[in-house]
Amino acid sequence: MAITPSTKKTVSVVRQRTSVSKSHQKNVVLDKFSPAWVVVHSNEAPGYNLELINRIRSGVKKTDWKNLIASIGSTEKEFENILPSSISSMQKKAVYSRETSERIYELARLFGLGFEVFDTKEAFKQWLMTPSRALGDKIPFELLDNSFGFELVENEIIRIQHNVYS
Image (cartoon, rainbow, N blue to C red; front, top):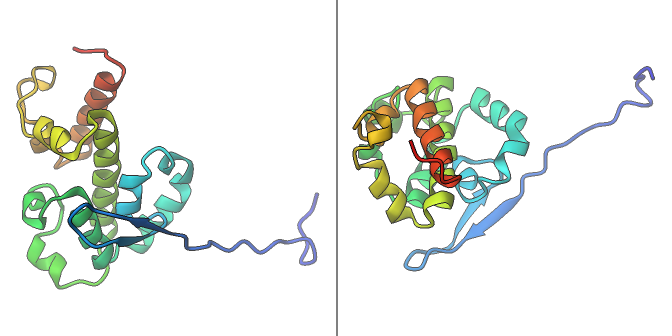
């Protein structure tokens, strides 16, 4: 079937919001597909990979980065050796580069998976900071400064999820 102006459909992306309640924090409203949304909806995120690619290409907004940090219960300082931009240069920008945006989304997906597998933020964060025999006695968090390290850590989390220990 040929697409003509009369048969072409217009597709619009609807921005949906999700409200996340924290026990001792105020309600946070997350834009659909933002990095913090990906953490909360890690099971849904794979179906939206094309949208996530578009978000990476257009750049993550500083507010979305701040929401991600708050939602995972961390500080920016903890990620200074993992992100390709320094924290001070990130604070000066409203929208981040593709490389930084990609790393932010990788972190969001990894933390979403980790929170799901380990049941609590604290348990996952403790695992991230504990040397892993399966990862050559390396601390998983220290491997997250490149894509190969992300892949190793993600694969190890998936093995734990499926009770396949190395």
